[in-house]
Every structure is written in C-alpha cells, then in structure tokens.
Image 1 (tube, rainbow, N blue to C red):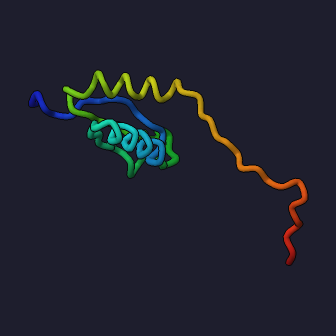
Image 2 (cartoon, one colour):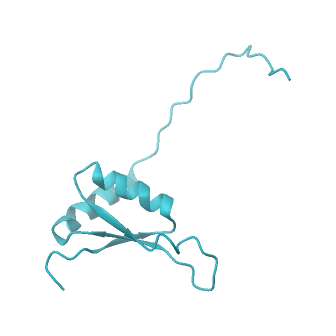
Image 3 (cartoon, helix red, strand yellow):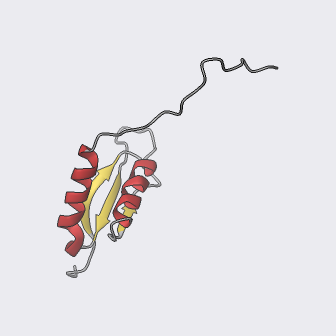
Length: 90
C-alpha cells in the first residue's frame, strides 16, 4: 500500500447521499471517490453501503468539512404564494 492510496473517510447509505458528499468535498478542492455504489441499494441480509475515500493528505480537512456541513441547519425560504391563488382547472 502506497502513501498516496485513498483512505476511508465515511460511509453513506446510498449513492445519492454519497454523491452529495462527494460534490460538497469537490467544492472545497478535495477529490473523493465512491466505492460500493452499485450494491448499496440492494435489499439483502447484509445491505451494502457506499464508502467514500480520499487521499490521506486530505483526510483531516475532509472530516472537518463533513462535520461542519452535517451540523449546519438547513434553511429554505419558501416562495410567497398569493392568498387568492386560483384553483387549477382541468
């Protein structure tokens, strides 16, 4: 095993969540790799997960970014809908 071989960062229950994490890390210049995305959605006795791997040199910063991101509250501003909105017609 080389010093530059990717190391485990975390797991995600499915490809969609793993993809979101990979995109978040990429936005901060950290390249992450998914392993197991083809079997994560299977329903079996031992369901799979998606592993996220990063370079050893990025591991500490990647952990910090994911911890910070997971602790942030999600804020969404709903658009204003008029009170007198018409019912859809068929």
